[in-house]
Length: 328
Ligand code: SF4
Ligand SMILES: [Zn+2]
Image (cartoon, rainbow, N blue to C red; front, side, top):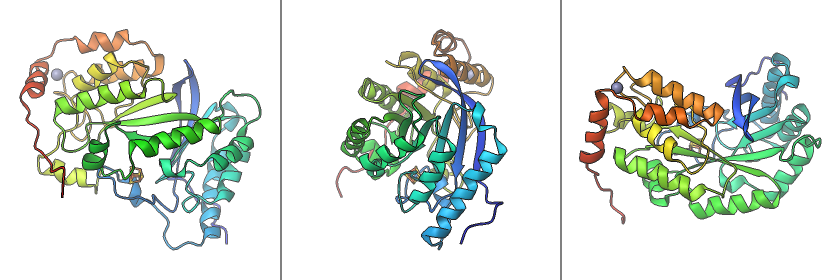
């Protein structure tokens, strides 16, 4: 049985992204699905958004109506890139039945699609099939898989995030995507739990170096404290502070490639923040850089003066790591 016609996605909006060295019009859709099969990451609140107890047919029906709702609400012809997110993995067939991929392929044919998934669902056959549905010859690379790698450090991914996959799993997904002629976007996460500010900065610098030449697009998310997460519990106890915007600017200013970054919740206590006085300038510079690729503005704000800069430097030099056991 199909859902009713009022089924809506969790969110959808139009925007602009820098892609292939120019600004392109995007449509981002966050679909409500059967939910993430992993469902354990310490900072994730999306995993609570899911349909429960639906048959595959009912699930497919609800997702299809969500797509149709967006297609009726937005002039799709003006959109160049469609970014598809679920509360998990777009290419997990238990979460997003293949009838939904067929519908998305028909609705968004001719667009560039960037679809998020965990690496275990990057399957060559599924990607080739979906590419054939969306490819009308207009784009050299019509499909990108977006994977939340978060860091190239396996221990940090395991201990600070509980992500449930290794760098080798990611590399395997990269190989499968390349074999299918599909692009790769990697998401990094700046400052997950249990890292000092200095460790978080060096983790991102190392991750960016490691990813250089391996993936097509890198997007760095700055950690923000979402409601109902383990991270929120630690934050309320004073055991976690989101990154300083100084740190974010430092990482972006020295990155070996262009990096997309939209500091979610920036300037607020739950997001990347400084003292409150200088936050706006740095956030604006990050957004400008992310869209233009012009790094000079990031370098300029990185060197601007504010009393909280000394505080940040003190934190970098004095904050001590609190060890987690390597063995059980
Ligand atoms: S894999 Fe993604 S959706 Fe699933 S719990 Fe982790 S961050 Fe959340
Ligand atoms: Zn300041």
